[in-house]
Image (cartoon, rainbow, N blue to C red; front, side):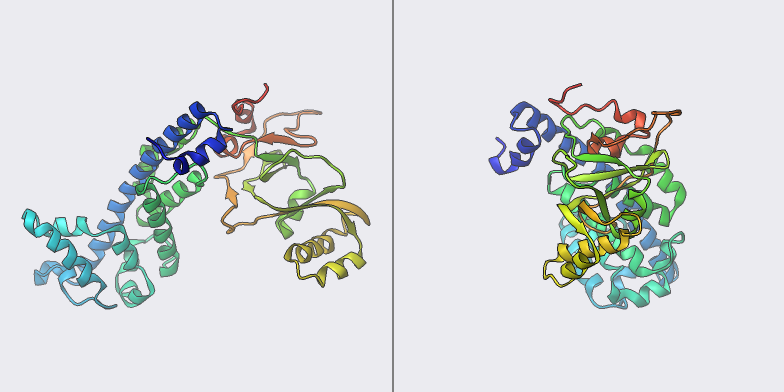
Length: 359
């Protein structure tokens, strides 16, 4: 009863094992349901906060007319949306103020934070977010991101390639802009991460590398450099172990190239190229030459914060081992992104074994 296109990504993740693919499908649905609960709580919190500010600004208690029936600075967006809700509620005899507010969509509230309502933001809407920077664009971007995530959940899209931990953190952060106590309640109530941790099928898609030198280079130019000819399993991501912790940035690999000459001549040649990876590698060589002698090396070009494929953990993963030889990784080590996202320390990573992998 499930179409081939719908099951294709699950089968790919499960290496064409239909039983495992169905387990992954079920897990994705449970994760979506748990996430949708969190979004639902936030939506109620958001609309009530905005409604309260608008009610006060338009002196609704004094004039007796709901704010949404008065002319609103910014155009007829409010009037059109409210009219549609009232028309839907009227045959049910539920055309009350409370039902109208509840019937307005997440998109409606997101729209109220758009640039056309800058005047309304300055007059009153900013008071709905007392713990934010006070900048409309910051809130508008955050609300719109949650709205898109909500729509994806509502349409039963797959979550296997969605950065669920990041999306959930965005929900809690937005809630905290409105009310920190409500955000803490929402975080305690949420089951998203406990469900997310139960993923039945994972793969070792991330290489963890020792990064005493590599981490500063990554921070500087979003790249990793190592000796030429060094072998790696196929991976999608790189994680950095330095200062007795795995750093929170988990970039995706954009491009990998071996046997790159480290020299001023090669920088000049690559700079003239029309290939963007060539030009990026030229920058990496230039930045890293103080630490890397002339020779030939292997380069990984990586994503940085803001790239759609980039991932960031909620916090660094500490390593508690002590003494000689106790480092979590000395050359390279393979783990899954999912394990990194759900671990609280490196101890947890040893508990994850992808399906079909050797112990």
